[in-house]
Every structure is written in C-alpha cells, then in structure tokens.
Length: 125
Image 1 (spheres, rainbow, N blue to C red):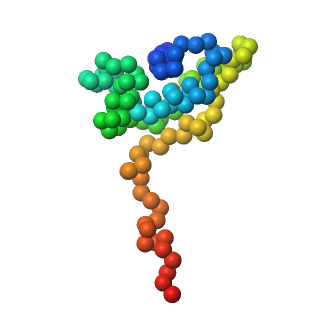
Image 2: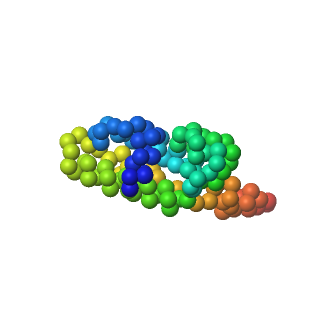
Image 3: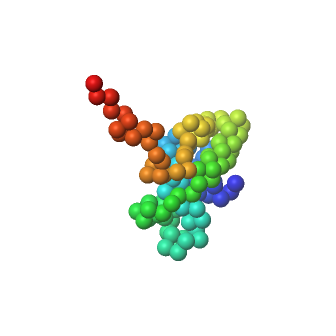
C-alpha cells in the first residue's frame, strides 16, 4: 500500500531498497506504536509531521492504532521487501522478523497479572 510506504519514507527517509536496515524497521515500529488511529484526521496532530505527531500523541496519552493495523502495515512492507530481496542485488528485508512485531491490543495498564502478590507468597508454616 502506497500510504504505508509513504509513512515509512517520512519516518526513516526515502532510500533505495538495499539501504533500509532493521534499525529503520525498529524506528518505524516505535512511531506506529505511538500513533493513534486516523491521526491525520485529528486536530492538533494532522498539522504535524508523522514523527512529531507520534511524540505528541504519546505525551497526551492517546490510545494508539490497533495491533491488527500495525501488523497489517508490517505485513505489507514485508511483502514489498521480499520482492525487492528476490529481484534486486543487495536488497534485504528488515521487516521479515514477525516476532519482533508482536503487539498486544491492550496496554500494559489494562492487562491483569496472572497472580496477585499475596498468591505468590509462600504459605506460612
């Protein structure tokens, strides 16, 4: 999708396929993890560059786009870079590590611990 490629270029720069690195993929993921859904439609964010919008959204505690959306964007970039890797010398795929992109929908504060602190204490003898 052109919009996802455009976002990538705005975050890490427009480069040839062989110049993108895992650090670029990591930086892009960090920005996506801070951006709310439809950020381009939000007053106060839409006027900003994507990195600045992500920073501001994070500062304001806005909820980010869904995990499904982030995974979809990674998947699109993975397919594009797999094609480049197969067809162009020196191209690598910085988005192939799906495990590095595991994202949960609930924030850490919304998730519950498996056990409470008293449950973890050993029984008194």
